Amino acid sequence: MDNYSIYQPNKKKSNLLLYKKFFKLLGIIVICGFLFLNIRTAGGQENKNLEYQDFQPAKQGEEIPNYPMVIECLSIMNKTELSPASIYQIHSKPATQQYDLMILLVHDLSAYFYGFTNNFQEVDLLATFPNATINDVKVLISEKENQIHLWSQAPFSAMEQEVVLGWDGKDLIEKFRKHSDPSLEVLELQKRYIENGEWDKVVVPEELNLQYPNFYSDFNQMGIFALKRAHQIALEKYKNKSLLEAVEVMEWGIHFYFNAYPYSKTHSEIIFNLQNIENFSAEDLANFYLTPIESFSLEEITLYLNDYGFFLSEVNQNQKAKPILQKVIEFNTNRVVVYINIGDVCWNLGEQEKAREYYQKYVELLGADNPRIPTRVKERIGMKN
Image (cartoon, rainbow, N blue to C red; front, side, top):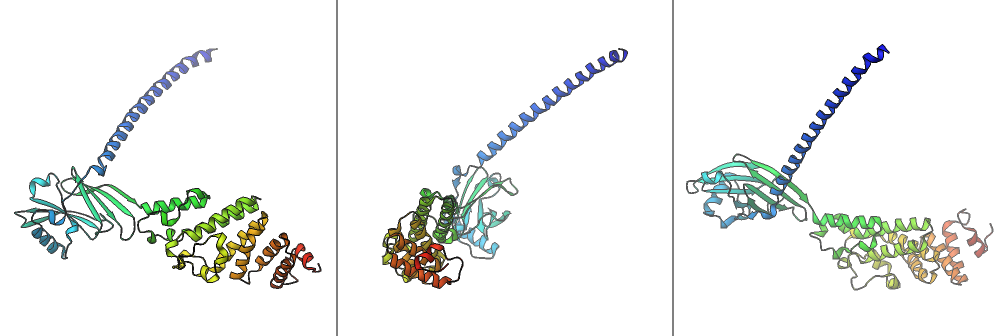
């Protein structure tokens, strides 16, 4: 009992201390919250200031006052002949009060800030900023409230860079930088659609309206990638017993491949589709595209056509499968598996004698003692097991 009476007041004191600590911690949390909100608000205001759409285009080249004298001075200082397209008039305070004219020169991918005095007879280099552009030729410059926005586009591609520089009276300070590539973004999106099998969202390359499309390997290989991926998905569908879907996927892939680049085909007057495949020769397909980077070899094409014909036979579309498989034989007479595939197709169509001829060729190429020869083939041609 005595021990208990001594312990009780200490417990109350301990609880009181805990309450004080709790309220103190709560106060700190509230203060931090206000600070965080203020920082976010300030950050939002700073980002708002970097909205370059409101910037005003700077005067360029021969538009600026006393341009001949200006370009002569700058050319001497930089020891090179300068283009009018690389010289811009800038209005920045407090430098505006000290100089008759201020110039931003874009040269060697960098920005140089100059001030002219004494009727353009004297010039000072105020600041230099490296990595200001990605292309000296394609540059647009605008300014607003001591901030300079530089846009440039890389040579022969759609890659863009935007840089916002602030002038503090002494230095050019980077406020914002962004790289983007609209063409690459579109191609990556198309590639994801193909990868995911979202065929309804995939656009034929010629209809994408990209800037500098041939700069991008993804564009030049889009037809190849589409048929390869369609074949992979079709095999997965087949393994999962989704036979009709396997056929549909292969039809999409083949159609896309042969129609992806109609302007680059050597036989542009011939429109390829699976219904007119009988009109195509091996030479037509082997030389279907002008550039090899866009096309499969004839051997690869026969692989995809053979598997497509096989999937058709698996869903009892034998009449449709037969001309496809006949073309595979025409394109590649040594492709072993096509002979059993077309043999099965002919057998299902009631053409037993023709089927036996194909089966015999299959056995000949594979080897009569090969254990992989199916029982049905042996029975149909009278082979001993």
